[in-house]
Length: 193
Image (cartoon, rainbow, N blue to C red; front, side, top):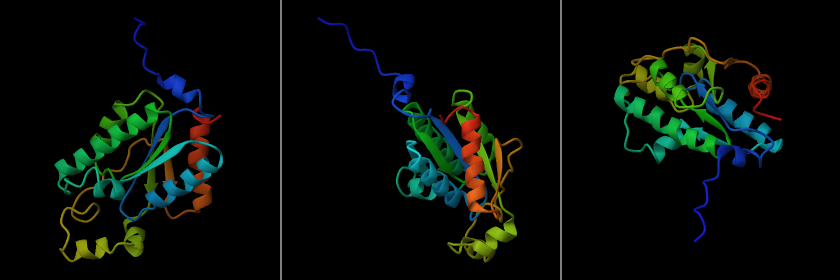
């Protein structure tokens, strides 16, 4: 009988791509522009032949994390699960773009520790609370201010600003410019050929 086939390695998967796997974690307040920036980056990378997948916190909460609320414990588990899915996708050779508030620095650090060195890129989408409240696309800030929503990040729950993100994106800045900065970060790190 023939020997059992060896599993396909990450490097074998990546050899099929013009790039290497990585996870870009966009963090910031609700309404900061995380999803908008992640979508723009994904669109540009896709046009360049880069295999990507976007993990959006809101979308993942509708399915995989539908059993979670917004308590600190549930937020930690939400971030952990998204990180684990992202890690599997990086192993598959994809460039993963995760747009998730992830309010606690410790949770983001825990996710980073699960990745190989140089595979996790934290991008802080730095947008003031005032701008986020003006945008308020889902009316969440207004509901939080009225007391209708509890544990709302930036109002009644904390957001811990990243100490040393790989990139600080200007959430109220020019979208094309911020997108180019994210792509250049990946290129400089050797993730894009």
